[in-house]
Image (tube, rainbow, N blue to C red; front, side):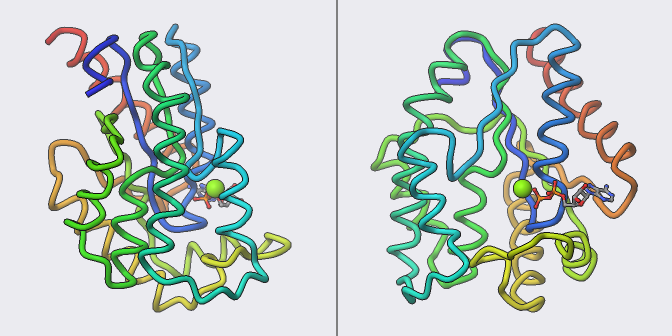
Length: 216
Ligand SMILES: Nc1ncnc2c1ncn2[C@@H]1O[C@H](COP(=O)(O)OP(=O)(O)O)[C@@H](O)[C@H]1O
Ligand SMILES: [Mg+2]
């Protein structure tokens, strides 16, 4: 895995829309930079030219393509292959801390919720050579209703955000299942609390794991 090659460290931040991912990716990046790390922030889908184009396609609010679940998997995967090869792997090789706003677990949860088995999604990633896997994943966990109220001030909801609350509850359960399934990598961070408390917990978790790694 690339994260073992150059001494970098790969953190992914996951959770439903409105859970605070973008907020806490930014705050964590700032705090770890302040600690002296070289930090690279990425978003998935996005960051690369291809990824940003796919992001617009995939999240476009008016899109009604009735995307087949596996077509959705393939589009997210294409962006992720490009992101991993073009940005994440080189940054890790260079010893940076990479912080991603969503990554592979989002596919497991969202396309998993549409009926695609995890094994299929993981196998496709293997086939496509997504070689980087996170050292630490922070799942920001909160009730779908709270997340909804935090999204309320957005001008337009994107295609996935606009789905009903029941769907978001399913997403929440999916993330908790991810945490149970990958206990060494994934930590659930209760995100109903104030932003400062959540940011502090994310930072402490990252510092601890980074420290453990360095001493290993
Ligand atoms: N712990 C928190 N408590 C209250 N509001 C928060 C907290 N974390 C984030 N927010 C606010 O909730 C909204 C959604 O956060 P955002 O980071 O955009 O979520 P996401 O990227 O997961 O969709 C933003 O207005 C943000 O300022
Ligand atoms: Mg966001």
